Image (cartoon, rainbow, N blue to C red; front, side):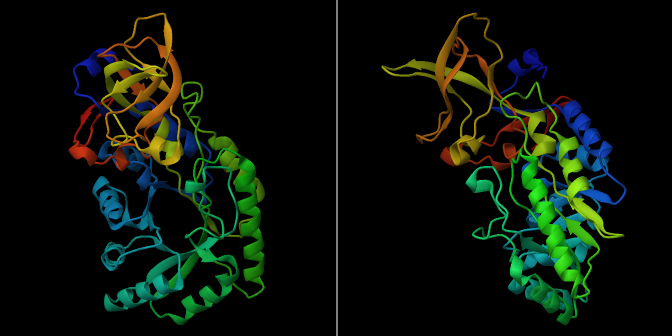
Length: 385
């Protein structure tokens, strides 16, 4: 990725930079692999920067939301309400009512109590709520345990064996229309076999439901496709071809069924970079620390998941390399981006880029230690918060 380094030097750090040309290229790549009966809903939780959302809207995608705030942000960005799906295990009444009043495409329901609350609220407003049942397929995924969502012990979804009974319950509720099945097994998944296993489990479930005469018009397989954090320049775009081909090959859709995807990280992660400035280089008896002005308040993934991002010194002219722990200024021992990392000799004032930060970066920023939220900048110009 080419960075406008001279322009960066004039900006207050830390800040997020988004390459919208790469974003548009990524969106186009996704579109090239879609079939007529497939629809992508961008997982808004990955990044809600308004400039990013407007690019996704322009590509014609829908939105996958997990809160009322995300529904409102999607509407404000121009997503059509009838392309918005609403997921999440803990939907508040006001969030459900917002979805009902604006006419979202469907609620991805995760429990019978939630189903009954939606029915009651829909009755109060004279609405019929379209729902898809999020089924827990008890499928593991090769990813970090904190972002695995499809196993039986996870909090997400309706138990596999309860599917038919919950569909029966839907049929008993006057203000509920069950229009589909929804699944999601995790995030940052790079092994296509995990998605193939999910597809086969969906086939099994659909076959079972058909023995009861049940065929629903929509199947939503969630998202979860990962990216290359180690080599963002070598692989700036995720392997959408393999991802979509896996479902085309293994998932047996019924005639007329629509297939839905909820992609987030794979769309926006590589276009985003967190840029900080070196405050101090501290040499201890065992370690050499590059202390920068960005920290876990701007990018929490390393502290939360042990995630590792590629780090670059954008302004060093040194040929000599040194080994550093790259750390932030927050008063927490977990405020470490990477340990024992080799990069060009670093001095106070050097700009440091933390790559592949477009997903779960800016959106998860906090004001811990009374720090201001980071500003954002795109290849098109400064972007207001």
